[in-house]
Image (cartoon, rainbow, N blue to C red):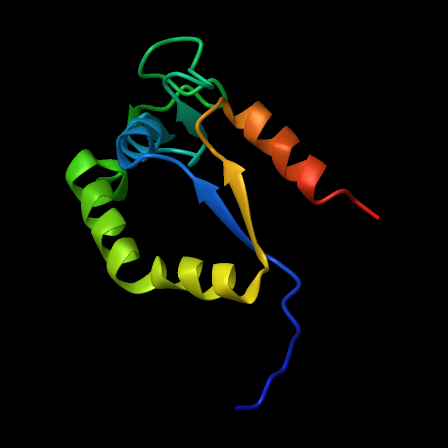
Length: 115
């Protein structure tokens, strides 16, 4: 097998499926300008209206709970086996993705400091 890059680490953002559904399911998008909001973490100032252009906000099809659950199933079947692969190679780094996004980013930056 030909290798084109050395992988120093693989990151596993560890979070329960229910939390993924909650987080992705809270996203809304402006129909006019595409600006994204999150109803919990970054809500618009006026419910249902874009802060940037005043356009109507909507939930994209891929952010609806049934779509998210399907994406998680596909992930479990096709991508999740890589967790064991990298764990066995000794270069898997787990990051607890349950806290608020700012805390997750802080943990990531602690484990992968900028040079």
